[in-house]
Image 1 (tube, rainbow, N blue to C red):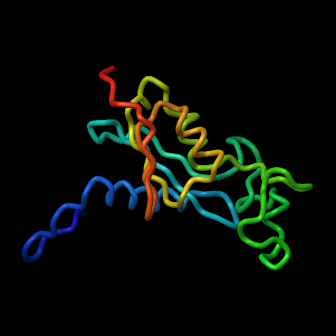
Image 2 (tube, helix red, strand yellow):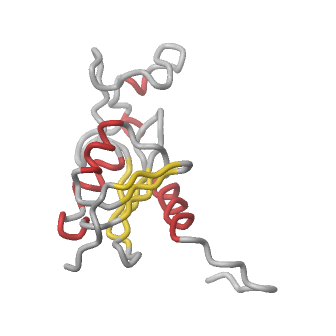
Image 3 (cartoon, helix red, strand yellow):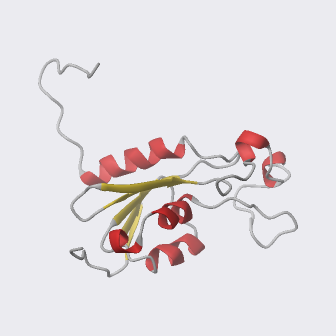
Length: 153
């Protein structure tokens, strides 16, 4: 049942605040023992185009669900936060939320879109986002604009 408004209604959240809250909700599906990140893409007219979260590729054993990631089996003392996860002996095999999002939203829909992410994107994801056709990425405390204007499809 939908909540009933009692008293004066609260003001509606801004698109950015709402988008970030949805990205945080999407992050709950992440399949990682070390970090939960979610992303949601909105068209220029604020329609949800897709979601993504970090985890192993579809059909592969996951980190949180299956214990498949060698990094996920280490403590933070053994592998501190911020340690490289690519060019190491036991690399992370997960896709980042932004990668999963871009993989599943067709390019013609991405043009001019905004992506909301529950955490600041890494340098590689910034590169992917800048070349994906989106116009803007927003995360808590920051944003990037990529100079791609909304395109009528």
